Length: 353
Image 1 (tube, one colour):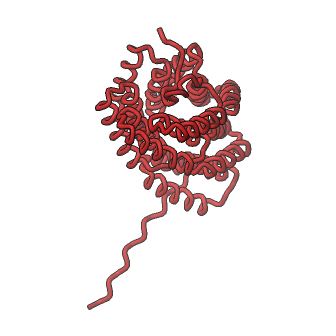
Image 2 (image 1 turned 120 degrees about the vertical axis):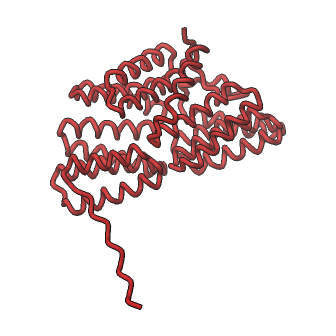
Image 3 (image 1 turned 60 degrees about the vertical axis):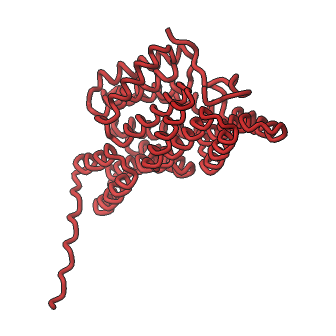
């Protein structure tokens, strides 16, 4: 049996904040707590406040503010000699690094966070840090390496009755099944995640689960039902000001419309999502939105040579980020559009000695 979802990243005097609190509300209360901690001279309270500032700022797409806040949280936690608080700060930094496309840095920070949490006997921080490592590997497409870790974390979350972490693990494993072509399994897991998050009042997890269900339904040709689910999830994202989740929702709407052959509508969705991702400096989302935009424009008659050049650039961009699965998506787009990759230029001949 799962209890009500909670947000362990809101700590100390902020722990009563709901997991569904709007990010602007979280930010306002965290800034107020930061000011009180400065007056009281409490390093630990300062660490908790800066952590909440970092997480609210990150989810609002204010990446520079988030960067400053998680580092300030770590410094305050170190001054307080609190390993758990140090772990949470570094976890936030690793999560931000992943959001910004710095996947190698994300893995480094999250591994450090897991080690700090273990030394500090903070089981929740350790679980979140390991979950971050698993998610980073999944995003990179390294399913073999992180599949077992996802399953282990799911089992631990079920055993402890932690709804939010169970939902996270279910959604991650479902995404791997979806990308591997096991659509029935993926749909069942997304639906379980939606059911658990709904009962636990985890609005963020529920919105992501609905997005996953919509994706699989769209692959089955159930376009209108998929669009309705995305509209439901979008309302949650707007209410909570989940900027990143909203952009991914719009990108998925583009996917659904593209699969239905509604290319002009898809192009508009991808273009809007691309602007949102660029505004929050999220390169992974921007690259995926660009891919959808290129495909939509190609279907609408865009020049084939320019399309090929754009796909080449996307392949390089995704490679730099380290997204193995996404690079395969570019190759699949070439096959789908009937556009071969340009042959590599032959090396220049050396002048005769």
